[in-house]
Length: 311
Image 1 (tube, rainbow, N blue to C red):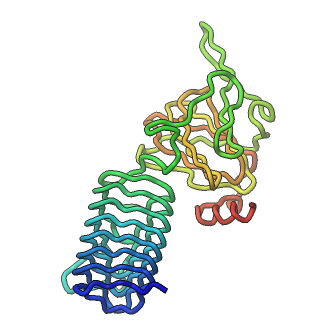
Image 2 (spheres, one colour):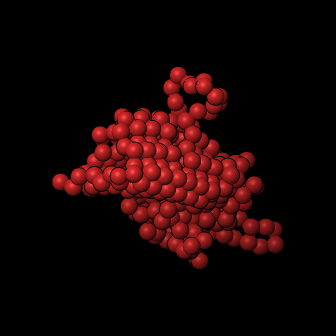
Image 3 (cartoon, rainbow, N blue to C red):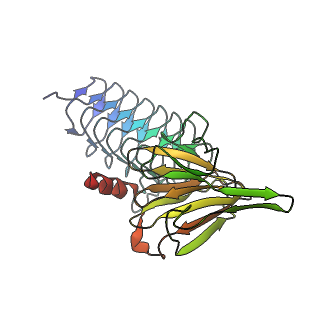
């Protein structure tokens, strides 16, 4: 047992403080607040009554955690990050219920970031310093700016600013994501123009039952953010460019689709994301199954649990 340390100059009314947690000087913790084990609550912080903090959480100086906030295990909150719980605040007019936010496991909030009410910050997501988060952030996403937008995914790039290298000749190239292959399709060019070709169950490793196209996507938007239980997909950006992130639950990699003879095969039980659409981008997707909502896994935590069950 390692009892919590509470500095003599801290004002802590709550008794729900976990073992090993440290609360430093000039911090205020209201009665009813719940703080887990091995947390570090730095000086000049405030924690209201209806706040729940998990284990191994770091809250740096100058942070106020207002009613309704839920903070999962291993979250980092940088200095002077700001949270709001009322969309239309008025002096002496409290809402019936405060609209809190949720910071999921492993998320990091940079210094001076602003998190609006009702926001979810996904597992392992990173919010850059000074970002203003107006919409929920998916798991593993990196967001910057005002308003915050997704600029990358944690551990997805092969290098600091780049996606995975593209195959230089026709054929399939394995990636570090299980079952995901990049395909360089046959390209034929002559004076009459150019064409690319693929054959189902040969070049494209399944027989397609449907296709769809995605276009006119604003550059700040992210599509996908789901996995399929049974359906295979093959993606080609036939105009412009977009980036694809594939995730098998253990490995994550980003790919740039920017030419008509480049495709990517996303098999079942791979989490897929498409973002960084150019203004003229047209993404063509072939699917092995007819549309079935029950085939979709739209929650990343559920996806990870299913992957763990397969091991």
